Image (cartoon, rainbow, N blue to C red; front, top):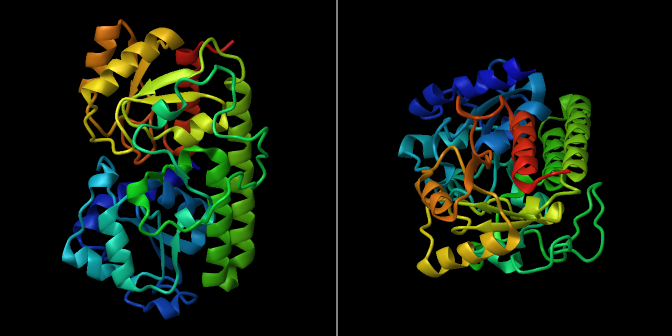
Length: 342
């Protein structure tokens, strides 16, 4: 399974360099017929979307990603050739709010079968300091929930799915780091592929069901593994884990905001010092695709350990696993160690 998942990723750099020349020349209205090899030509914006397209599409799709491994997706810039090549895709899967350049290019492409994953679940406003918003609640208290939430496709939040023009207000796009929300997105992607390529609808449904089952199993592992811990607070350089924290009753204390390159303010650093002491946090987490300088400096100052908590924005040779499921399991292990799971 892992070999199959890695093959499209290995080919990404060349595809991007050629300006998406791997895509067929058929128009978006020919999606059901696919390219010359009979497969649906799918363009995914970055790894979490690529994983869904590959797992659900299976042998019926040819997936190209716009973000090559090792590239910080938030900083992605597209060449005119890449932007123009998007219009040749049969199906585009992206997540609005993560990559502004992709958002603009997708709108220009006008491909009929274009799916914004943000509209397949509910986004939340975590603001620029999501950890700070929750950081002073009592440990063990549910964060951002009204009672217990279901885990079988339940939305759990009021509000509209669409979020055009609201990114500035702090809507957090990192939905893939919550297995339950990611499963909701998977369901929507499966249905959209069935519509785009009805001849293979049964296979898309079967693959979707298999993936959702796997994500439900992952959710159960997180629920069980993080139920009893010495502390509920973790510190991270990139505030990407707000949904995960809320799902499992944890408190994310982000040094900066949801932008991984944002610099923390002096006031925020002082707050983190206080929070670390009061919450008995043990670890400052950083990610593989961004600098670890801030994390190491803060950890040294506080006498804490450092560790990797991967936001899964791309798979590289530094990733603690070959695919989404494996890296999420590694993240669980890292959290259990840092939080003192019992």
